[in-house]
Image (cartoon, rainbow, N blue to C red; front, side):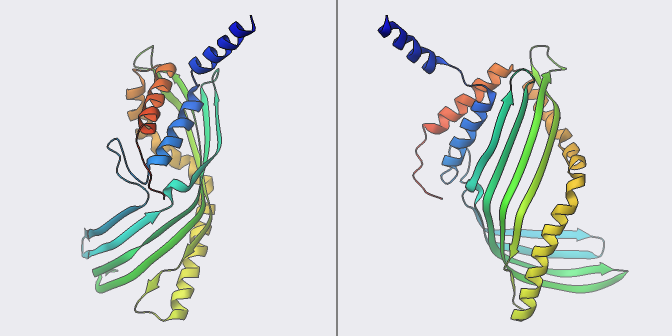
Length: 250
């Protein structure tokens, strides 16, 4: 009898289907693991780097051309999940993610003319970029409802997000400026960035409304899936990622 009981426990444990929240966490965990390598048509994302990006902006008498060279963005795989909760009865999901450190390096060169009050002024700007964000945090919550397209499918009936940054630190270097002025501008960039982010918080709800187009696109895909099917879909992607070998460390 004890043997039968043990076998029953093992079978139930191995055959249990994770809920939606578990599937999301599984998917994010495997995605984080393969970010340095890139797999399943996903390019390497840790770091993101490019040798050259050409820039070209024209608006009336304002004409600016330039490039970003040797750009590198690292730290995207530093994220940790602080909260991941899914209420099955309400179909409400809350996820709270923090990136401990994101850093951008590169060189930005711009030149052209600026139209200021009807005057065309020559413009030249060259800077070595070195910016670090500490504790970039995203809090996202949304609720599933019944699809308006298909009675068996899903839709995102409500969506909200908030974001915070612990610190913005700039160590940029403008080659035409001296050390003191460079340090002053870097301190100013850090202080203003943190201030702007804090001041934006009351308007984040309005910003989340901009996701309306995104949720509409998502709802078209979700209309063909039940919550069980969506959960299984995330599991399948996570399992596919798990089978991919990635030994590169970020």
